[in-house]
Amino acid sequence: AVVSLPSRRLMGRHVIVTSGPTHEPIDPVRYIANRSSGAQGAAIAAALRDLGARVSFITGPAEVPAPEGVDVIAVETAREMRDAVERALPADAAVMAAAVADWHVANARAGKIKKDGSGQMPGLQFAENPDILAWISQLHQGRPPLVVGFAAETDNVLENAAAKRLRKGCDWIVANDVSPATGIMGGHENAVTLISDAGAESWPRLSKPEVARRLADRIADELAGARE
Ligand code: CTP
Ligand code: CA
Image (cartoon, rainbow, N blue to C red; front, side):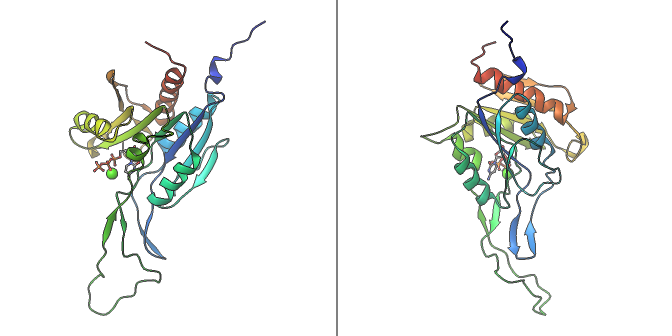
């Protein structure tokens, strides 16, 4: 008898997932970081794995451990993350869930910065990091057929997220409201809106693993050429 395995719909597919924060060094003992726990990215990688995908999980220094059964590529900075994404190509889909630092310290020191007695902190100069999502979305050769970004916003969430999708050139953007009143940031749940060419679809407030399963299902539909 023919047995269909609908649950392994991503068998033979390769998906890149970025996750977690990045750390941008100031000197050998200090860095600039952000509050991303890496929970949503890890859940997405696990959900894609459960559908049979080979997952390249490119993660900054996250609180949440990487899932079993994925290829873990641990990085520290945004520039290392970009290089790791490039090395992981080609892919059928890319999900950029990392909270990438927007800047790195241009004058990071090779040795520990010492107080100089002036009472002043030494000046830091910043340079913009590569925008990994925009870069992969706009690749002329080897662009993954499906590129998914995230937009964590505190104000005008849907408007900002929709504009971000067009500006960067990704196919879908997962918008979430991280204003303090929602209690989302750092929590176990997420309330997201999936924005694509087809419009905006708001999902109820769900656990992060449930958001991940729904997103992985959508990705499997899309790669299978499903039309609604
Ligand atoms: N992103 C990325 N590389 C960067 C910055 C962001 O790949 N250097 C990705 C994130 O992983 C996310 C999406 O871009 O999928 C949106 O990140 P966000 O910080 O909301 O966008 P920015 O363009 O940095 O805009 P903002 O000024 O609002 O921070
Ligand atoms: Ca940013």
